[in-house]
Image (tube, rainbow, N blue to C red; front, side, top):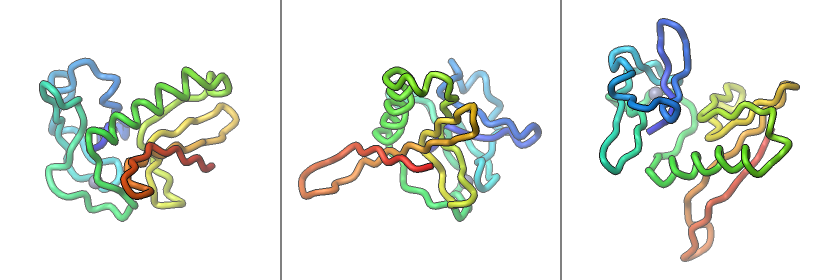
Length: 141
Ligand SMILES: [Zn+2]
């Protein structure tokens, strides 16, 4: 349930969090998964924040985890926090769900720096110790 879909005719990555009314502004027939190229649809509701969803199962071989509304909220929190709290990120471009082909993984939140560095931030919502749920940040570059 990603924030990013691709327009196949242009190759453009579409970030649904930057679009005011995705249902009205995006053409449903022109959105595909950036990993597998299968058609995607816009999901939004009274409570559910807009996101993309596969019409069928994703067929890519990238490592993924099931995404929940909490995971999407975690990604938004990370993106907002690194830009606001870390002065060294002022020149970085922050993107959701950046594919890293070398690792066959998708970075939940990636910061792209002018010098070419990419710092990937991952949101993990899982019990790491019994009874505790942790929002963890893991950085690698
Ligand atoms: Zn897919």
